[in-house]
Length: 338
Ligand SMILES: [Zn+2]
Image 1 (cartoon, rainbow, N blue to C red):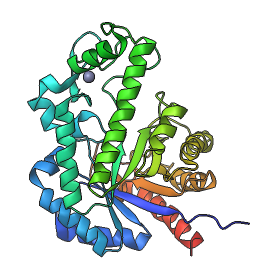
Image 2 (image 1 turned 60 degrees about the horizontal axis):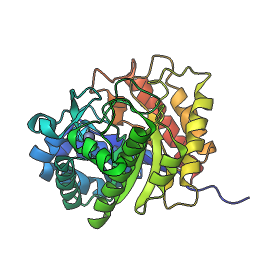
Image 3 (image 1 turned 135 degrees about the vertical axis):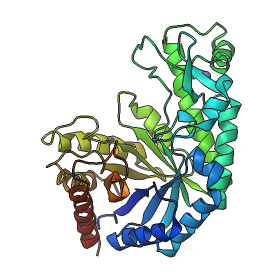
Image 4 (image 1 turned 180 degrees about the vertical axis):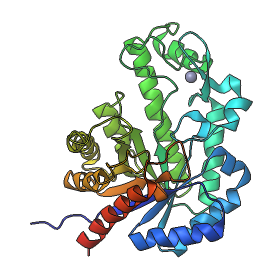
């Protein structure tokens, strides 16, 4: 029997910018068997803490782990509970819905968005980050599946539509509109991955586990040169999946992830939900890690350190029990790879 691939473990870390505290936390994560830490760098961090982020990345390496970074809530188009300055400063660069109403998120087609990403990447590169995680890139409204109200129909998107189809952009999400916006998502990912590569950083692409799933788009994203990990945030508690349904739910998303990555340079990756866990359901975290491994996922990370106990809006009913479950799940992996 061929040897099973080594499972790589990661944790995300946020909510603290005191380096002495971070050092204790990072060493605890290394002790648990984490191979990498995903630090979040929000627009606020970019403005006020770039040097601190560099120190955090250095402490991560000193603790024997790899430093990843994710653009947390940047421009309102990535995952993350963090506000965007640039959205407020550049209303002209924001998305518009199909009726022309302003939306609080930058349009990735606008140059303001690209300038922000380049500035962010420069800071990540200066911090010596190994992998940038492009997390849950999405438009402010869904546009697939005949949505009544969709985005984006900003001036730049209308111009792009006119140029490509030689007709004004309609107010309804026709197949041509969907194609244009699908391509916007793919081209944005491709540009970000290439821009990270130019600065010597690899990329992880993590897409939402929702109705936007499209096998072709996933495969195209995972195949981009420079993508070292590709996966999804199948957060089963968040999506209201019951305990008996969880293994089938997670296997489905894990199989989609593996299908997207097979034969590419990207490791299949799965994020495990360690926030907002209902009381009594903590043990599902261990089952989730087992399910992911059994389905062929080789990079597994948990969101987040200490089960997001510092955020009352995301904390589990019982943060200690949840964090204990993460520890047990990691310990099993560590034992298995010894
Ligand atoms: Zn637009």
